[in-house]
Image 1: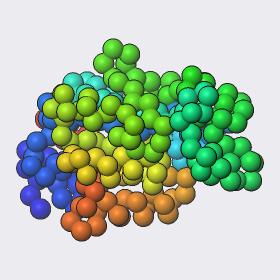
Image 2 (image 1 turned 90 degrees about the vertical axis):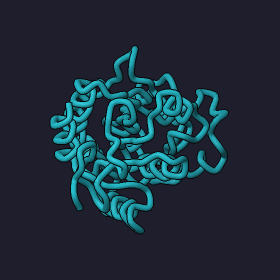
Image 3 (image 1 turned 180 degrees about the horizontal axis):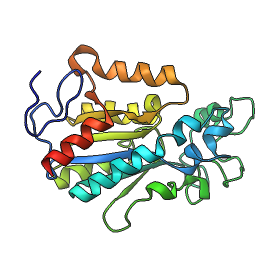
Image 4 (image 1 turned 45 degrees about the vertical axis):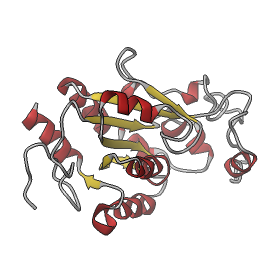
Length: 235
């Protein structure tokens, strides 16, 4: 498939489909690179998962973020978390989050404060990827998708954004949920395959494959190198 100006080489189609990759139409979305998912003692580790694959993403995402900043693109960050009184936490989700060997879940005390609670140290984004305070909005969400119970879509529509480059954690949960909802809202999404990670590698691989099904049912999948190359070429 011919790579046109304004596109990133991707699969199963070069992205975006209409070759509209530009500052005016495209934004980078970094999903949930919070201490609770990326740091020792946080929520993900308390769930019993190895966080080293997530930590390995950090240098890659630093490069991706810095390149988008230097090229003048809009950047958004997301954080998953709940109100301190747990009024945004459903009974099922409270049960589910503690259904693990540690018995700890959302709201439980931990080394980084109460797990996935807004205002606690673990809820915040890691310093290596911290948003610029005046130009990079943080979308605080109580669930998986950045669109559920937030003003994210409103922010995108006002700026005229229709293309989303998506990276962060975890591929199969919050990243995938955000991409699926974005697709239903008419956004063209690029999943940065080596800029995302899941708690287990097979979940990451399966989610990437699911995006590509049926001609790109949820968007396209590309490599960090290709995204950076298109940015450097265009800007």
